[in-house]
Image (cartoon, one colour):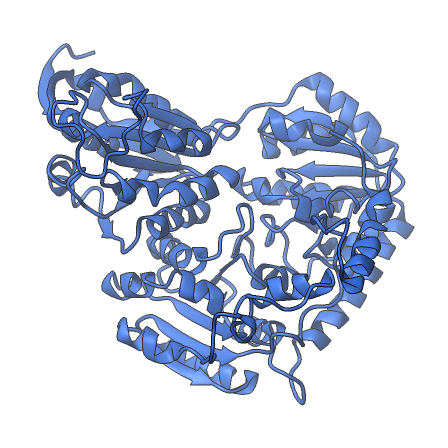
Amino acid sequence: MSTQTVKLTTAQAIIRYLANQLIEIDGEEIRVCGGGFGIFGHGNVTCLGEALYNHRDDLPLYRGQNEQSMGFAAAAYAKQWLRQRFMFCTASAGPGTSNLLTSAALAHANRLPMLMLCGDTFLTRLPDPVLQQLEHFNNPTLGVNDAFKSVCRYWDRITHPAQIIQSLPAALATMLDPADCGPAFLGLPQDVQGWTYDYPESFFERRVHRIRRTSPDANEIADAAALLKSAERPLIIAGGGVQYSRAVAELTAFAEKHQIPVVETIAGRANLLATHPLNAGPIGVTGSNSANSLAEEADVILAVGTRLQDFTTGSWTAFSQDARFISLNAGRHDAGKHMSLPIVGDAKLGLLALEEAVSGYQSPAAWTQKAADERKAWDAYVAENVAYGNRPNSYAQAIGVVNALCDKRDRVVTAAGGLPAEVTANWRTLDIGTVDVEFGYSCMGYEIAGGWGARIAQSEREPDKDTIIFLGDGSYLLMNSDIYSSVLSQKKLIILVLDNGGFAVINKLQNNTGNESFNNLIEDCPTVPEAFAVDFEAHAAAMGADAETVSNPAELGEAFKRAKAADKTYVICMKVDAYDGWTAEGHTWWEVGTPHITQSARVRDAHVDWESSRSKQRRGI
């Protein structure tokens, strides 16, 4: 190892280190950090900006319009690369940094790598209080950056240039660890960024990383195999971890060999093609009658790569009280949920080990046939649900139009609001790993920013395919400025804005629990004297996109063809009904808090009806 040193600023050393870290993917060595998203301010422009300028070809810096949306884009980039690569986000001190809190929480909830390089106050405190500093009178070490401790897997404040020799590798190891993956945060005091240190040259040597695959414990495999072989009605729940482990082929082979039906979580959509005979559909609150019918009867459930979120489990009412769980997961915390028999380890290796241990077992033919019959009935319902004619425009109709016209490798992106449920239930998977429904942290506003990040990653591997974004008017108004980002960076998006006049899905929940429509639809806001519609077409065009408005799904289909042929971001706007056209089938119970006392008879009756399903709720931990 070289004993030579090089004098660099802290900021220069951070960027030089990142530029020399590679990862092996499918036999190819590629830089593990794909670049970054940045908005400069006084807290990062003078030192970190100087360092980034000198590496602008190695680590391309995309100019964001909002720090929160930059974080969403970084998260979507990591999803597209199956957590094998990440982007950094840099923000100035104060509000620039605190704007990243929500996107850090999204990445944390979804176990996604993202590196935040954020400005901080001066370590010396000589100029205090400085611009954008939050003073804590009894604790001068406490600042806004400390808020990130609850939403990051790795957090550090760099107080001396030498510290990064330990901190950077630790942050990188966290982001590449399948069991502990998540966002990493480095607070960079403005003075420390520019301080110098004689770094060992060996710190910057080119290094190739590989994602760790942890072999499962033999005893856990044996226990799980014994239980699975006793199953009369087995079921596999396939989560997003199947794709992150690149275990789709192993999952498919395991299901086929043992003839076990497979249901998908929201994050696990597109683990199997829609046409696969063992694909029983999406499970849970936003799921399908087919998957939920099987879940109610299953006696042994093998959950692979899922954290068993409440939308998957129907707040733990989707399964029988005596159903037994086996959870295969890289994370110990997730593997042990609800008294599961845990298999802690990599999904690919775990499935291969379990395959050997249950050799010869097959699900009863009657159970497999029931799964096929249920899926056939669900497919018929979806076909009717997405059809259009003499009925109001709906999300499902728009989804059906796009599903019929898109390329099988186009990527579909949506997020919180009504569309995650509608896409999850109605989208028919055309190819593996082509669906990104952000429902881990349920962030409205993710759609366009996440689509931009996904498109950056997509253009590195499949530049001839499209990223297609479904979003409502509420999400559009929350965060839309990355339309401009996509046009500036020439990363084409196809964006469908489906306008239902407000936050219609929450209005639906409001009504379903007996409440009157209030403050969700624009027309129901008491502080709005006269409601009016936003001209989304004109707004998108003002940011440089091609845009048009259509009146119905048939026109939407023609517009989508024009969008496919376009060479830049294309926005299509269509009004949909706020009350009719929702997917009415496939749902499980979901626990929400309803008033135990009320003056409204409707609310009281709804509360009693809602609570009537609580008896089905499992009491596991």
